[in-house]
Amino acid sequence: MAATISGPVTENGARARHAADHVWAIARISIGWIFLWAFLDKTFGWGLATPAERAWAAGGSPTTGFLKGTGENALGGLFSSLAGQAWVDWLFMAGLLGIGLALVLGIGLRVAAVTGTLMLLLMWLAELPLANNPFMDEHLVYAIVLIGLALTDAGATWGLGRLPLVQRTAWLR
Picture 1 (cartoon, helix red, strand yellow):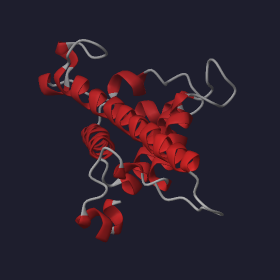
Picture 2: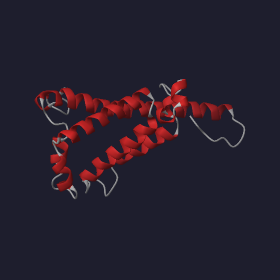
Picture 3: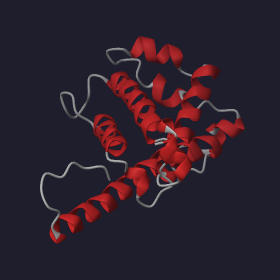
Picture 4: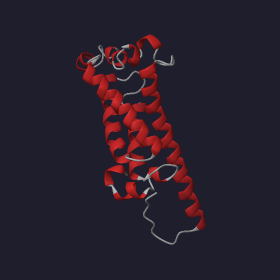
């Protein structure tokens, strides 16, 4: 984890940083799994959020359910008009897969943070006004965590972020 230290490193400070590195790694892998699971369930319809008959592999649209449900929201007209369009489905699914893999593997965290934050912000906008809070929901919290993951070099702990190729290539960090 990249950190600025303004004094001698104590044993307790090193231990705390080591523990924080592990917490960030757990957060990275956990959020990565959320993105990957969404991709897998929408692709194959394993029956948790997506029934088999509505799976992408069975000809269903992974964006229709969510986007059609936004019709009554502030920006619902815009988002519901995108529902079921092939280019939106492909872009959404590629995003879920790419962001999920990057987070789980611990590489490309900067790209995953930018694209994941954009995806989450669009989903947040589609749900406005929120039902349970004036402005804050899980989409914004996940976006904040994605940015934190990229800023703290979270791929270096329990990920591939320490590989020389990743260290030499800025967009892979």
